[in-house]
Length: 277
Image (cartoon, rainbow, N blue to C red; front, top):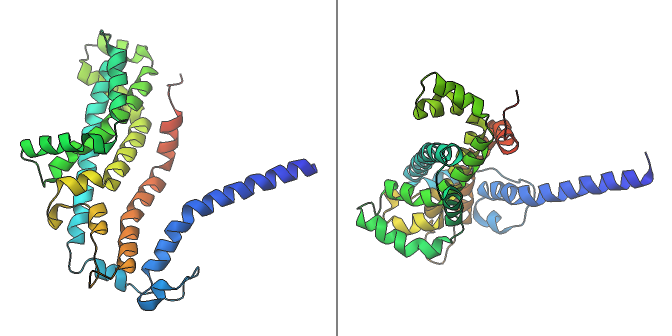
């Protein structure tokens, strides 16, 4: 092993270490702060000196934080279900059915995701209020579809284009309808892509703040990002950092668990694009 090779390898691992430290340290410090109380919150400590669950218990006192967690779970799951249902059917039409303007329609769908949320906020607010879904979790789910559906359709369409046409032709010759082709032929081989897009949609819906702040009015209908932002101290001059950090840890852990559970599916969904046979 030459000296240059050792230097390059050491530099690579050093770079990886810096990236990991930069990505993990904020979450580590949040966990550390969540276990501290009193004046210890304002002391710079990089190693745990005391453990107290007072902040975690305090998060659920005086505010419906448990209900906020349920709201986020309900809205995120609903968004994932609707995005995948509409994404699979739309991707089948865009990838398999030939019609005029198919490419333009796909580009239009993707371009919707490029609009900033602020640009469509007023129009979306009027729409949600007009259909009577203001301060409703279903209203949030509909508004989140603008964020999750474009990339879901785009990814699933790109994946479905690579599937062998022989699978579809054989099913059609056996008398299968388009819906049967989608559910019985394509879905079993599209699970990696669906898990990837579903998880990305879940994370996006779980972390969304602007629509959740605008389209909800009461604490019982708010999701966790808004609930954390509105956590207040005993007075207007107090910032409850311990409670905020504890709440942030509580809502971040489920995302980490999901990524760890489906990490293999995520990698295969991002790298797979064809069926080998």
